[in-house]
Length: 393
Image (tube, rainbow, N blue to C red; front, side, top):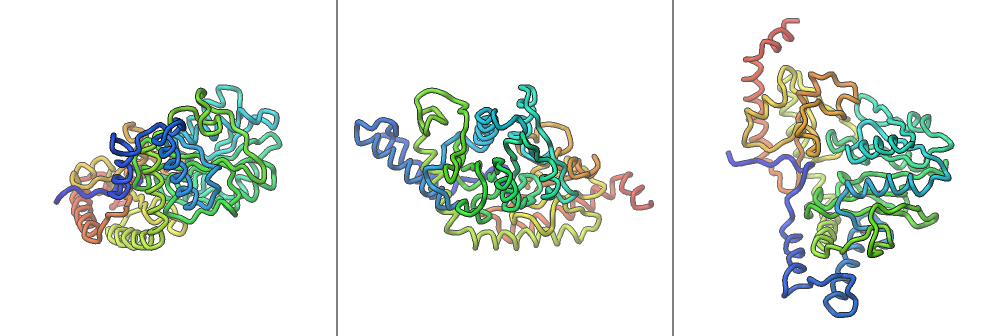
């Protein structure tokens, strides 16, 4: 069996159309100029390509193109949103609200802010990973500046009700930041109606290249004020200095354009494949779904097989590329902070595997994975004394 890739939540292959578009802005026979070099045609053409990409990305989320700031990815966008908003709004207060299930790019910023004298409230999720609106509401204070919550969790695929949360923060005069790295192009996002003030995006989660992302910064009805992280050059309205990587930007624009064309059909197909895989796993018995059966993005399936550690199972499946959690933390030995925050014990958390599906996943691959996992689970359970003890009790 050749390698089967089911780790799309970690990163996606670049779509060939995106790669072709990117290549047009790299070499001497292409549009390789610096977008800030407006004194000659190559620079002006590059600047136009950048603005076209900004328009393409804005179209997918129904936003004003002028509200998008280029970053190196969602991690930088999260940093700019949190550090930028908290530092620029000291007159309002020094309190941030987020969740224990957030990406490390938010959690680690929160810890740094606390070292700098800010106050951070980390919300506990329900057992399915969702944050109840009333729990968030109870955490808000007069000095709360910002609430930061993921739209779709990168480990378990759970969808948060950002519309309801945004309505509440808007009513209280509090900013809402949403990490949409895992939801853009997979769920409808309409920033003309959605009360979100800051929104992080990433190209490599949506068949674009690594190293490029964007931060949506709302300008109307009230302009969101941010303190920049980088200085020098004045690019991106002074919020993100540095020469713009035209080739990466146009590739991100093309990736988002393609996603808008195929999203409905693609996500329906992926949902069917995910459900097919889950039915095969559930038939094994003693398999837990980590997340929400009702509120989940189509492409992510996180499961724990009782009696088996994730490491043991993955060793038995060398031809299947999957993950035990976030790619950003998979090098560590600690159980998933997301699953532990949801109340999963260490055994269940250490047994969790994330299967994430995407554009090139096929029915044949799903059936091969289901068969291989079934064989491996049966074999490992037969070898496990703990499994025998668990079955006897």
